[in-house]
Structures are given as C-alpha cells and as structure tokens.
Length: 475
Ligand code: NAP
Image 1 (tube, rainbow, N blue to C red):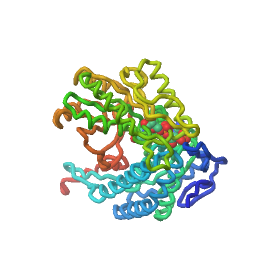
Image 2 (image 1 turned 30 degrees about the vertical axis):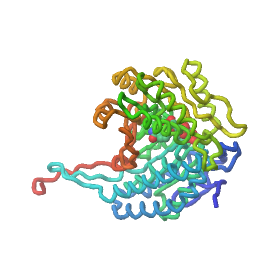
Image 3 (image 1 turned 45 degrees about the vertical axis):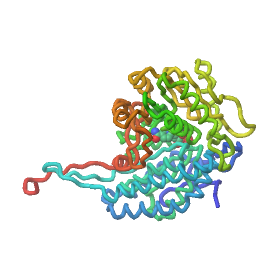
Image 4 (image 1 turned 90 degrees about the vertical axis):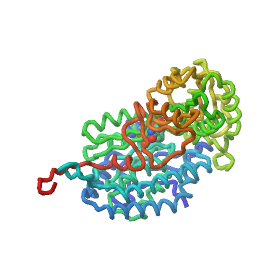
C-alpha cells in the first residue's frame, strides 16, 4: 500500500512532525491531478537533521559495520522496487517499462556496485615514509532532482553510507514520493539514529540552508547549472567540499565510415529515453554532410516507433513531461527553434492530448550549433540534427557548448573513434555502441559540474585523506 499523503520527516532515526507548517502537492503529470503531498520543511528541520547527523558521525567506524549497513539498506530497497516503480510512474510520468527497468534496476546495479567497491577498497597505503589513510569525510548534504528520483538518491546516499558519512537528503518537490518509500527501506534497515535523514521542502529554503550550513562537510548536488552555481556560492562560505552534477547538451557524433543505421537507432533511443529528461541524453546528432539525407530518413523512421501516451500502458515509450512548468519549458524551446530557422522534421509544440503534459517527439534538422537549441538543454523529447563538413568540424561543434557531460562517437573502427573521443571535452563517451557502465566514473566537464559519481570514483568523493609521516624505524 502506498502512502502518498506524507506528514512527517525522517530525522534522527524516526518519523517526526516538521517544525515548518504547510505541505507541497504532488501532481500526476498524465492526469494533472494531485495524488499526494509531502511536508514543506523549514530551516529548523534542516538544523535538527544536521545536528542528528553530526551526532551519528563516527570517524572511526569500521569497514565491517559499513558493509553491514549497506547490505541491509540494499536488501530493504530491493524488496520495494516494484512499489517504487509504480510511484515513479505516478509522480513524474515515466512509462511503466522505463520505471520498472532504468528507473529502478539501474539504481540497484549502482547500489551493488558500491558494495563491490567497499569489498575491495584499500583504505590505507604507504607513500614513502607516510601512511596515507582514507577516512569518512563527515556530514553530507544531498540535493537531488526529479528526473530519476531513486537513482539520484542512491548515487549519493549509498556511497555516503559506504564511506561512513551520515546524510541529510533534500529530494525534488516534483517527485518526492518515491524517495519517501526509499527512506522507509532505510528505516527498516535499522541504521543508527541520524545516519540518514530526510527533509522535504522548498529548494530555496531547505536546499540553501543545507548548502550554507556550517556543520555540513560535503554538499552533493544534482540539478540545473543555475541552481548548482547558487549552491556552490553558498557552500563557499564554509569551505565545504562540493560535488555538482549539472546539465548537459551532449553530442552523438557520427564520423565518416561509422555505422549510420545503428548510430541513428541507438542515438534516437538515447535522446528520447525517459521522455528526453535525462541529463546525459545525446540531444545533438552530428552527421557527415555526405550522409545527411540518408540520416534524416532513418531518423524519421526511427521516431515513428516512439509511441507517446498513458505511462500506465506497457506499449508507451514516451510519457508526459514531468510537470506543467517543464512542459511549458520544452514547448517554448520548440517554438523558438522554429523561429531560429531550424527545419522541423517531425513533432512540434502543438498540444497532442486534452489532458496531461504531453510533448510529441520532435526532431529539428539544420540546427545552427550556436542557436539556443544547439547550446541549451530542453530536457524533453527534442533532438537537434546538425550536419558536419569533416572530422575537424564535428569536433569543433561537439565542443562548442558550455557543457560536457556525455556523448557518443561512431567511427569506422574503435581505434579511430577513440582517437576522436580523446579530444572531446566531456566526462563520458560511448564508443561504437559501448554500453552504460554503473561502475564507471560519471560527471561533467565545463558547466556540467565538478566531481564524479558512481563506482570507486564516486565513493572517493566521500573520503578525506590523511598523511601520517612515520619515523625511520617504521619505514
Ligand atoms: P533544479 O531545478 O536545479 O533542482 C534540483 C534540486 O535543487 C531540487 O531538489 C530543487 O528543489 C533544489 N533547488 C532548487 N532551488 C534551489 C536553491 N536555490 N538552493 C538549493 N537547492 C535548490 O533541477 P531539476 O529541474 O530538478 O532537474 C533537472 C536538471 O538537473 C537538468 O538541468 C538536468 O540536466 C540536471 N541533471 C543533472 C544530472 C547529472 O548527473 N549531471 C542528473 C540529472 C539531472 P525544488 O524541487 O524545491 O525546486
């Protein structure tokens, strides 16, 4: 049974009445109906949660204890994944097939990845006459977005537990209900009071208090670049460690001799995954001019297979935008791209259903790389196709946005695609169809952020480093 009318926050090991009054409605974007609400916490709630986390912090916590906590949380979470998938479909419109797979199975793989890292990680090493020790960093403030609500939380809370760092979590207001269900799993796992705390509420209040809080040691934020800049500025006041996972405008680069048919099929699927609401989506497709017409035909045929509709229908591949404001944002991008002279190949900004925040999968050809659609993420099912003269032109265009989060390269062979990829300023690239790896470091270049998540590199973000210089007798 789902409880979508939440009135308590999880602080210091229990469900407590918030200090702040008020609540925030959660709307099903497919029906436009309010399906529940969560408390609108206050900065007093943040302070109580941070104090509980500070009390729970034990810098000498054993690795065995951390492994045990992690295993208990993963087991309790795994049992709840079918329920959490249902909730994600209701609160942000992810089609059931996406909710049951990417939205919940990837977080499980990511969580198990942290357990694997913890099993083999070397916490001490010798560097000359020094003993170098990796310790838990301290109290973590985690702020997450709505697009993959469980994944974003798992990518922060699980490595923090593995590292021995207590957490105060602030989820997105658009999709908080699945996060409350995850916290029920944490509660069932029976971690010591204060190890994980949940404070829902406004980003401006809860998020900003967490970012500026003098007793938070690490601030891990995932969201838009604008808000990332804001939390970075606030965090600077107390010199805390900051990890920012921000926006992207990633390029799917098809080189001369690359497998065009596969590149288009995989590229369209990537761009439209989760309705295009994916930070690492390849939202620009770069195609050699010599194969441009052929590519446009393949793209049009591929897009016709992307059925838009009720997210509860197993045949649906694209559900609604997650919220009314997101829907308006995406349609605004489409309208302005037409005015900027891009050629509408398929889709458009027209309303396609009477109820629900639906956007048709949309493709623009001849997009100017310097135009708004060539530079900024729409965060909806909108693909920009850009012709390229040669490899040098493709590289220039791939690197011409303020972002650098993800991307793909399709070359005639792995070696030449890899050589090209080395020059692309981005944190992750799939080479000739290489698959997503939940253990590989994930994060941005340029305005896509600082720091890395996932696997060993994500885990190390939560560790402090201490050097002990030993006397000669111990060298
Ligand atoms: P957002 O508006 O930046 O919000 C992200 C989180 O920050 C939410 O919890 C939000 O709370 C909170 N927030 C808002 N204003 C704040 C403030 N002044 N101080 C502190 N916290 C504040 O982003 P979003 O719309 O949820 O997510 C979409 C964006 O996230 C896209 O740009 C996407 O590319 C990016 N993203 C990046 C990654 C990555 O790994 N690089 C992954 C996923 C998404 P409220 O809910 O109260 O607004």
